[in-house]
Image 1 (spheres, protein in one colour):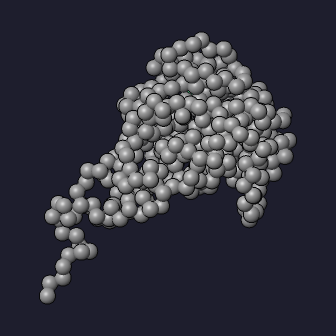
Image 2 (image 1 turned 180 degrees about the vertical axis):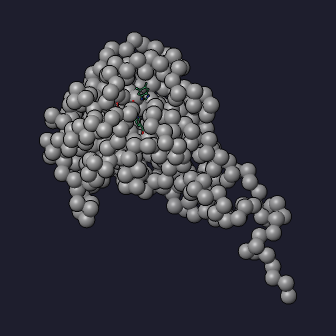
Image 3 (image 1 turned 90 degrees about the vertical axis):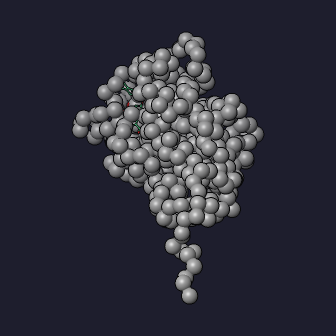
Length: 376
Ligand SMILES: O=C(O)c1ccc[n+]([C@@H]2O[C@H](COP(=O)([O-])O)[C@@H](O)[C@H]2O)c1
Ligand SMILES: Cc1cc2nc[nH]c2cc1C
């Protein structure tokens, strides 16, 4: 499938690699600050990454932050891959809008705004403040019986995510945070992860909201069938990367075959953040699988992503390894909604604040062991 002129094509064309000069300056600056070199561990990498994102050293503080929770339903629910009824997606959307979900509590604690986006809920939702209606369909088709989405639906959902990111950034957001809600979406996530990384469903499939052993086996079999029926053989590890246009059309085909509407929207959200040079903090396995889509569409999108946390879902570890991302928080969370990314947000802010406020050895008059004059 060829991506014609439109928001997706324009977003892909706007994505540039991170600024390596700003990253070099950030590394050198870290080494002059009053701390042993490397003492802030992974936070130093975050600060360097954000310098590359902004093309500036120090990078701007990542505030204010905006969480977008993309909600969608899944035809594969009919296969019994989750113990929860589908209407919980709609009910949780109402809960987010009423301020009663964990994501609301974590967003309040972090000082992030919350936007809920209906990209594919299987019910009509009444208008409400904080709800953005970008519905592409009333849920996907069953991915174990054929493609979950048409290619037009996949592109429309990608462009919905792009539009939401652009609106939040235009309204002043300096950091985007991914969130999701969709009963059965860990099945689609695992299928995407297998298709993009070549891992076997037995390794990439987890218990989601908490399935028992029998349902986990069923879930693995459903994902195997989905990959087979959609002609998604797992790529050999040694395969050469495809040419760019071929990569884009194959990525779109894979997304449409086994993804969800919220995965597509999240991929668009990530791509738009990269195009705007704004950092995006990724949540759990749904965000991780969506980032695989984004990176398959535009490899440099990865430069703009920070892995907020590592979910308990095994497929999330597989996705993070494939993307080369290290998660900031690892607390066995398996909730989604953006909760893990929200917990990581203050760490990202702290990493950047260090670059603005911490004194250098020179300015503070602290002796640096590496530059101390040797006595005659
Ligand atoms: O973010 C995660 O890693 C994560 C792990 C397990 C479950 N979830 C959430 O649980 C729902 C999907 O679980 P399931 O079992 O219905 O596939 C969906 O609303 C996700 O946000 C999310
Ligand atoms: C209650 C509930 C809340 C959630 N939040 C994200 N996914 C969820 C799934 C369930 C079942």
